[in-house]
Image 1 (cartoon, rainbow, N blue to C red):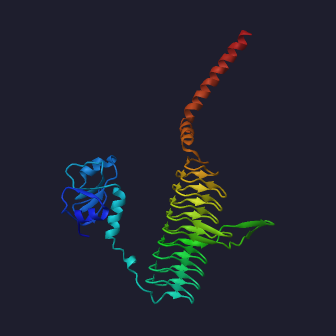
Image 2: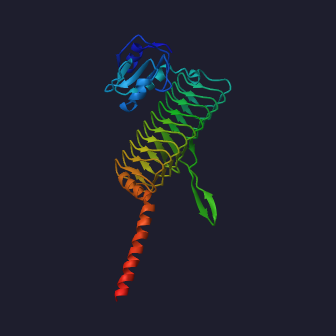
Image 3: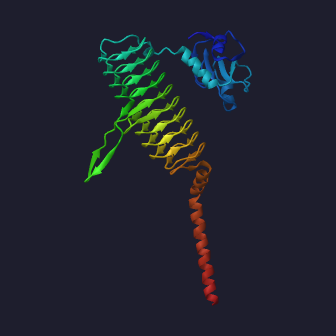
Length: 346
């Protein structure tokens, strides 16, 4: 990478204060940056680090002044830094072109324009793959699956039969789309499997991390809404419906038939019971267990999850339990003394 500060500012629609001719050769964090690097700062909280950084230039919010530094001011420095990173990324996996000779492509497969298929990919019959989609090495696409245009399927992804993937979807390695839902009935003491005959629908602009499991529906469909982003190691049960633009962070488990409305955030290690409805804009804080439906724009925390302020009060009291125990014991002794004196007077 060799870009002047002026060239980078044009890409991120920023304003340069300082030397526009500085040549940037790399990207780095505030503390690790060296001469030639571009770094970023998101708020005044990191002002002291920004002053000390060895970076040649900084992406910063317009409200933050950093004397003696060459700055590109933008509305969102973190996003701008990502744009620059995307501009210079030289990832070999993105250079896949054409269809590798070892790929196994069944009959009646419809391939769009400029589709790239890596080594040892298996594509079953009656599958559709849209224009400019890339499927990397070792991935499996099942019967009757449909994948839209401009998708990127990383190595060793499994997309099971009938799954429907929208446009501009990114799925990372180890993820399984459309595995059987976990459905059993106990008959005479034996767990009998319930057939899962539905599908999974992934809408446009979704990104799914590594080692995610999204189960096919028992009937009808499991849905991941447009623009939703799912982190690594997430389990989504059968018939779950996730709305648009949700954020699902690592190690979340969502039980079957739960409905999650748009713009919700589930932090790390959240557990969700089945058959509930999570209102639009709900935030479930990390390691919470959501056991009942929520109203829109709720913020909940705890086990079981409660309104955030209520949960904080309960937690504060729990931290003081040893003090409360001592006080109760002291009060019990005082009561015993008073009762003893009262009896003596009788």
